[in-house]
Image (cartoon, rainbow, N blue to C red):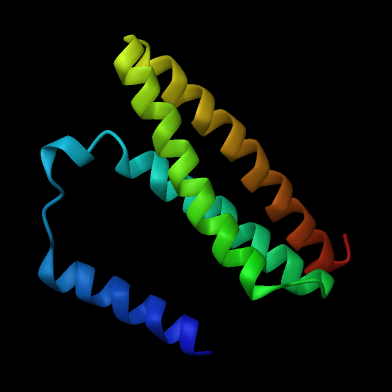
Length: 110
């Protein structure tokens, strides 16, 4: 319950304060958000399956964001940042959709 309240408060403060993202961080922020969403949907799926572990969630969340940002950074350094960004989005998108499908099956038994 506390996490949900923190999420709502964070979204409200973000909308109210409208923080600016530094220029150097802008290419990495969308990738980090998608990686974080992957961890959140994976945690929700694990919770519904009865195997949720908060330590695993925190490690998954942080490592997903850091690894995705590192891949995009390496792509930028190699001059192929757009291609690696697309690859990261595709892989994480597939994971997100498979987790959402499992959540849907669990909730609606379909």
